[in-house]
Length: 208
Image (tube, rainbow, N blue to C red; front, side, top):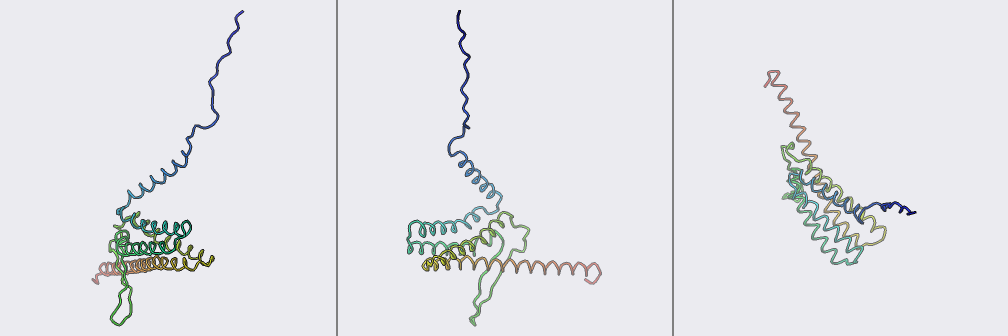
């Protein structure tokens, strides 16, 4: 009597079919896509990039020279150069284009100094993405160097403390200048609204 052959079954794998590094690659790609999409909504995407580019270069040079290669002299020189370029770019270009603000310190003939502020009268024309990127990076940058400064003070690394103080002064000066400039611009805008409102009320009452 012929025997029946056992039924064949397809082999099923219980492990998920996910390529190695797929999750990490997907997260990196998603982050990159979000960054590209955010820059696409900016009115000045190139300026937004350069607003952060010099800061990233300074940070990478510092981390490599401080914690990996231990090269103080070359790190100090390169960080100083790129921090100065970042200071000039933020003070003269990105602030004017991204938030419509500009500041400088005027030295008078008697030796005294005075803060001078300029602002865009049409604040409604400013791009929300430009404004968010500018203020976010401008606030984070000095805080980051304050952390580095605190860490090196705890480690008694006085050479690196000097570099930290210099970059912190660059970053803090731009933050203080634009914060004062923004405050001054808001004050003038409020005064203008009040004066226009009083003029409209006076016109309605027949005094104009």
